Image 1 (cartoon, rainbow, N blue to C red):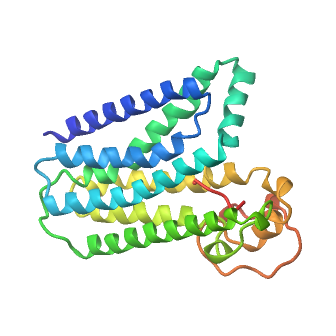
Image 2: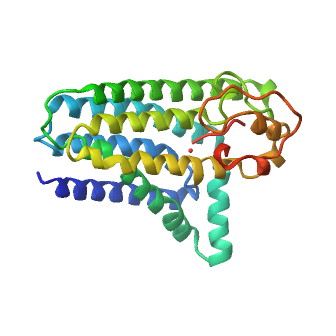
Length: 286
């Protein structure tokens, strides 16, 4: 099957999936569950490409699909269970509220154009490595780049999983209510789960990059990295946290945003607004 046709079919699959999710949100009046389908949707694209790209080298297709399944199913289930336990995400509530107040949009329009459409597009772009990486039959073998990519992806999946597990255990303890999570991996990074996700998708890209089409899919992990660091990840999550969480300013002042680094000595309550842009995802440390 021609690569363009595979990409088109995958686009239509994601459009149908997110269209159905949008319809579901019209009954719940809460689009927060979309975060879990960010991960589930990537699993869908990996599987659809696996069956559509009949000429691709089977072993590379299997590795790319397997990595995506392990990453996506774990994260998707984690986020879906978190939504069921904690309810509506304040970020989405605030976003839809702004669109309703400033533009006079209905909930249906605000959630469709402000949440589900952007998520579908971003997911499709991020998933380019697992789409383009499965199409070529050559090279029929793994080189050093792919092996490094596999190791990086496995590391990223494990790192993100450990970070989520540590945060879940912290939140489950009533004694930690209202406190800032600054233990384990969270002592070296305010968003270690984002770091794990970035490693995972750059690793997947390295596997795909050994093919003539896959090498061009770098836009996927590059866009994901930009999104987590500069757009809907760290900046959106940390907006206002220094005012709503006692001690978060100090935590932010001494702790790297995403990339792990030994924490600075405590200096008292810091200010997020004074942080360098270089130290500014799905989770926060509160």
